Image (cartoon, rainbow, N blue to C red; front, side, top):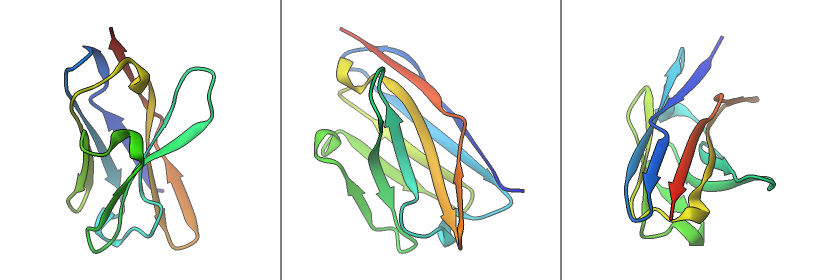
Length: 115
């Protein structure tokens, strides 16, 4: 059974940085298909896409994190480097990976940015 486990969240002041990690047990991120990446859910809002990374290593970001966040991965870990954090970045960040017809999510890690 594949499991995704996130870590690295926490409380940080506006302008600060955090690096989130996601470990996959049993599969490799290098073979995960489109849609694999990081998502977040802010308080009172729906879960939304933050960044994705393809098998070829191509990355894509939503406009509100472009230039501030960087997604990367190796075989068994996926990362999200978050710089210049803003209070609006507060939320639970989820790692998502898709292999074949299966869609896996981590349990989430809380990121809180204080003003």
